[in-house]
Image 1 (cartoon, one colour):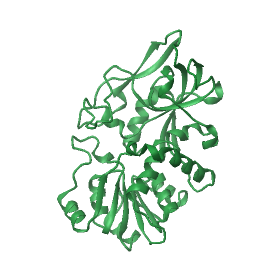
Image 2: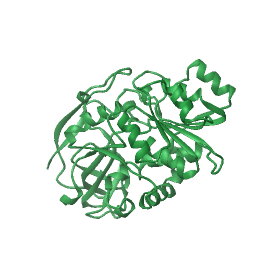
Image 3: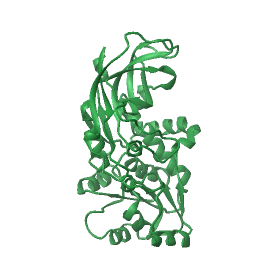
Length: 351
């Protein structure tokens, strides 16, 4: 069987901006037979995420992410359906997911590396397992729970940067659900601001490309900032830190403004922001969701429950076709998506 796949065509360089041409399509032949313990899967949805920018370099800068290799198939979060199985716990028709799913239309995978998922958790929206009821959802929930120090009834204000993205759009809603009295989002377009306030229940939204961000923060957060869910780093984060209260908390989710620069993670703050952080005793600790695997199952059940109760609104930007993986990745890195960026490879209904 001939299948299509995406391989890494070139590296953007440590300080370069990734482009769609860094990836290329090719065809490859799948083995005719699967071995004991393996399954053949058809890919339904693939995820593109900011952390993948690190995998485009020869050295990812972290010990838990392996770099993608030139001319080798690219991988990431994926979900698919089992077409043939020689694995004791997986049967034809099962839906499965993995953090290391190859960017291929079909693949033969080790069944032990796959996790079976229940479509009922997402009311049949299987792509949600790559977003709100998956790793981005867990990152947002566990990040807020572990590093936000939110206590219901204490009148806390949370600010979220990259607020219309996969994690940010969830983190703000979770902040409210866990007891923040005020949630303010920062994003880059008027459309995104409107989405945050009218659809997701944010109390205010700031377009950082329009007007004075400090003045808008002061207006939106009259009692200062107690919790900052940081997706972007850089100048925006320095500005937010200037408005943070004593003994407040930064949740370090991502630093997308810094991913195309050769700097350590987390990147150092500017001298002025660092001085404020120390003076006001603001916590800013590295957060890696993979260190909290014992919280994954209860976390997914909580996220699913909130979604089914209508308390957690989920938004996706979907592009169709494996050939558009590079386009989707480039768009996601430059803020082209609202909510989670997903690529639909094939429909579940075409079984």
